[in-house]
Amino acid sequence: MGGEATVVKNAGSHYLLSELPAWDLFPAVLRGKVRLQRSGATNPVAVGDRVRYESDGVPTEEHPAVIKEIFPRENYLIRRSTNLSRQSHVIAANLDQAVIIVSLFFPEIKLPFLDRILVTCEVYKVPVLIVLAKVDLYRDVAPEMIEAFRRIYEGAGYPVVETSVRTGEGIETLRERCRDRINLFTGESGVGKSSLIKALDPALDPKIGQISEAHLQGKHTTSLYEMYHLASGGFVIDTPGLRGFGLVDLGKEEISKYFPEMLRVMDDCRFVPCTHTHEPGCAVKEALEAGQISAERYNSYLGMLEEDKKFR
Image (spheres, rainbow, N blue to C red):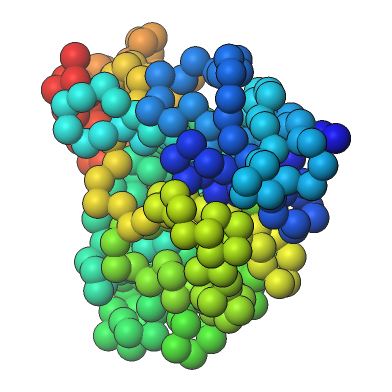
C-alpha cells in the first residue's frame, strides 16, 4: 500500500506523516536515493513537505512507511545562520500563512528583526499575518505605540491582529484566520507564542507529549519543528523562539523588491537599478519624505544593505 501524505514531524532520520486534511499519524523513514530539491539547506525534508510513500500494511514503529518521493514545494521558509557561515535551514514548506508574533514590550520589539522575517516571507512567497501579543500589558500606557506599529505595517500591506491571552482579546479572530490553513507560528523568544497556541486550542498542550510517545516510543523525539491539528480546523507548525534571522541569497539590488511599499513606487525612480540611498530622482526617497514609507522600515532596509556587505 502507499499514497501521498504530508510530513508533520521531523525527528532526525524518522518522520511522522498524515494524509492531510485527515489527522491520522504514522511513522516513516527516508531510504535510498530520493530526489531532493537543491536548496543548499541542512535539512532536505521539512515539516509541511508533501511526499509519496509506500508501506507493507499499516505502518508501525518497527515497520515504518518508506518515503519514496518528495514533491516540489509551493513555497517554503528558510533562515540562514546569523554567523558568517552559508549554512541555512528550511523551517517549513507548503505554508498557507506565516503568523509572526511580536510584542511591543516584554520583550521589547526589534523592528529590524521583524523586517528580516517579513522580507524572507516575501522572497519565498509565504503570506503573512502579524499578531501583536500581550496588548493588555501596554495598551493603557502606550496606546500611541500600538497605533504607530499598525500604521507602519498595515501601511506596508500586512494585516495586524491585536491579541491578549489573559483577556481573550483577538483570540477568536486569530482562530478564524487560521481555520483550514497550514499556519507557521514564529517569533522572537519570549513573545508568548506557546500561550497563544494553547489559547487557540487548550487541548494541544498534553497532545504534544503524546505524539512523541505513542508514535516514536520516546526515540528521536527532539524536533525543532512540528505540526499540530487545531480542533477549530487548520494546522499549526510550532517553531522554537528565534534569536536571530539571517537573510538568504539576496543581493543588495534585490532587497528593496521585497518591501511591498517600496515595490509600489520604485518603477518611478530615475535610475535603474537604484539603491534608494543617494541617487537623484529616487521615487522611494520621495515616498519616504511624503510619509508613504515609514522611516522605521526604510532604516531596516538600510541595515540590510549594510549586512549584505558583510556576507560578500
